[in-house]
Amino acid sequence: MAFAAEKVRDEIVAWIRDWFALNGSGCRAVVGVSGGKDSTVVAALCTLALGRPNVVGVILPNGEQADMADALCTVAHLGILHCVINIREAYDGILDELTAWIPVSAQTRLNLPPRLRMSALYAVAQSMTGRVANTCNLSEDWVGYSTRYGDSVGDFSPLSNLTATEVKQLGYALGLPKLLIDKPPADGLTGKTDEEVLGFSYETLDRYIRENIEPEPDVKRRINELHEANKFKLRLMESFPYTPA
Image (cartoon, rainbow, N blue to C red; front, side):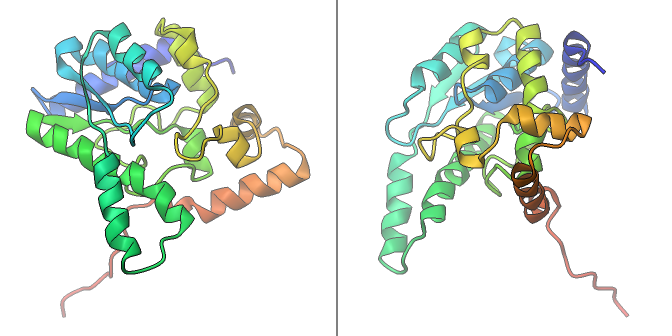
């Protein structure tokens, strides 16, 4: 079945309005803007749903950001209020404290920036009476390509049930600049594109998810292994089921 981008766009806009009416009447949507398609699409949907004055874009470089111009393009195109919060000093400070005590793994260094960014987003939201948008899509979540308690969280999530391919089509339906929608997705952490890190394309993954079109055996095995290993990221924190006597 073809993806009805315009219909889904309008349904998400209505859903965002309803969600804010129930969970944040009078609040702003706070969106971490990276310059990639997901955050651009989420910011655009929130702008349509709530109006420009009620959306705040937060750009969060870790020192120098290679695609800073794209992030600035997003907020300028949408005409929304924005700020730039550089997390470099916080990142360096925590690493200095950690390395003085324990050896710090490469994965820790990669995951720390997304967690600091989310802390900053919640600081902005709390100070401006806002609600934080999650910008992950189904494809990323399917294989665990997000940081737990970093970009994997938020207060509301417009794209969690849409694949990367569908998000791109949504971007076209929103009339967003093609340079932002068509650019190769990248995490901004490894210096590589998402697909270079994952070892397969989002197109391959999305056809597997939506149409059950199986990729070559090695790719299918990797996708399935990533999916099973990272399901815990999508579950609520588990708690001991104590029942008083």
